[in-house]
Length: 180
Image 1: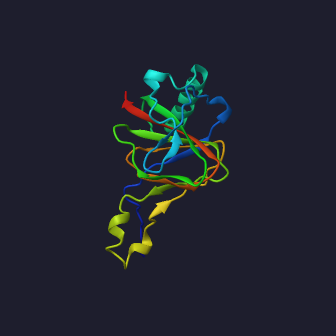
Image 2 (image 1 turned 135 degrees about the horizontal axis):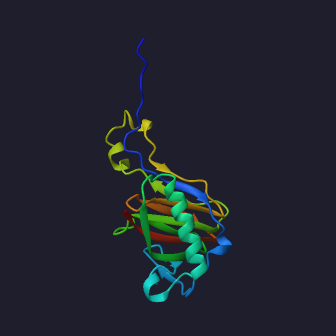
C-alpha cells in the first residue's frame, strides 16, 4: 500500500508573538499624512537622524525580535533596526498594498488595536486567476488575528496592506539581517 505525501513548497515564515506595548516608547512623533492613502504616520523620520526609539525601549524591542527570530533561524545572526515608525488609523484610514524594499525583515507591533486589519497577499495571487480550475486550492491572502500586545515579523518582500480602520495604532519597523 502506497501512502500519498503532500508537501507545501516554498513556505514563507511569518512569526507572531506577544510584546509589552507599554515598553515601546518612540520619540519625535510628528505625524504626517503619508502614502497614497494619506494615513497619519511618522514614517519619514528615520531612526538614525531622529533617534526615534528610547534606549530601554530599543533594548527590549531588539531582545524580543531576536528571541522570536531564533525560533525559525537556527544559526547565529545579527539584526540592525534601520527605521521604526508609528501609524494612526483615524477615520477609515488604510494602506495600499506594498512591500518594504532594501531590508530583510519587517515587523508590526499592534499598539492599540481591537482587531488587526493587516492583510498579507499571496505572491502568486495574480497567477491564480489564470488557473480557475485549481485556484480554490490556494489562499489568496492571510489576515492574522492580531490585537493589542501582538507583534508579527515577516520577510520584507511579502506584499501586505491594511484594510480601512478607525482608531487603531501600530508601530512598524525594518531590519537588516546578517548571518554570522
